[in-house]
Length: 208
Image 1 (cartoon, rainbow, N blue to C red):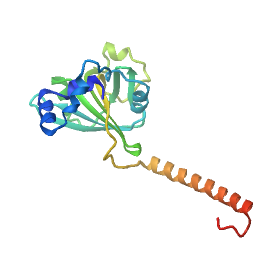
Image 2 (image 1 turned 90 degrees about the vertical axis):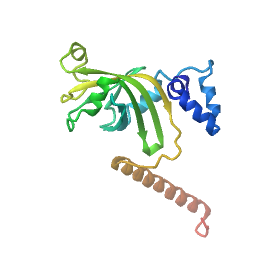
Image 3 (image 1 turned 60 degrees about the vertical axis):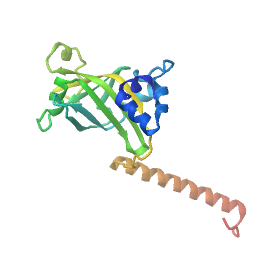
Image 4 (image 1 turned 135 degrees about the horizontal axis):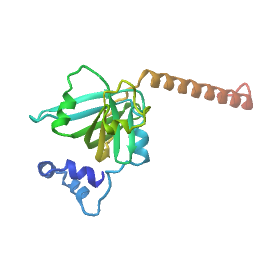
């Protein structure tokens, strides 16, 4: 865990609970010699641009949290640079709860999931909404996002952390399931060929 994430997550009340529960050793993540955790590297970039869904949390002006699942084809969440990610906001049920919350409080928290490989990335950041036909929108490459995009949600990363893989259930998409089966079939074919070769080398009476 890097410094940036600990600085946001370990508030005084959190530190009180850590001390009370006997996990005060987390204080070491706030030490002056710690650093980093707010600049995306190659691993984070590759992971972000591969996932097909994430959970997004916002908070209303009345203090209530709201969690929404955002999904799309791999690559729908883009890394614009090492501190900025973005996704296209498409028309949904037109409740605009997340958008309204972000208007009052632009802080956002994301949990990016890769169930197939038991990987999870947590991101905290601040949102800037770029509406269509604004100067910022017109400055974007025309093919950067789908034509039906209503607005662009950009997130300046304040902190991220790779979460422990423990307790992440194995869940596969249909495509991932097909790939796993194909991989197993290829492995089975390879092993059967190796077995036939070994039997041929050791003779017909071999117990192999």
